[in-house]
Length: 39
Image (cartoon, rainbow, N blue to C red; front, side):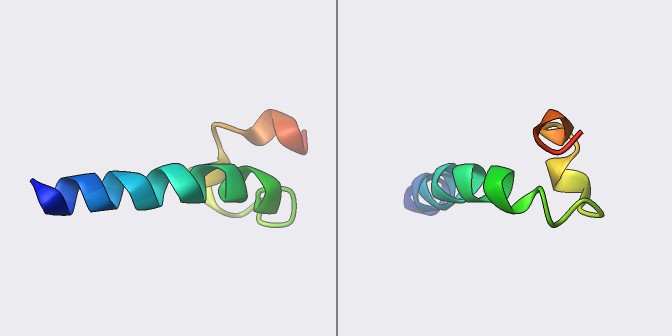
């Protein structure tokens, strides 16, 4: 269970960063949900 919690923490911290980098990383499928940021 500790592994899941640590992974969730990493994802939560990487989520906001992905949204900002999503502007320059349009080819990334993970930023598809936040496409409105650079749409």
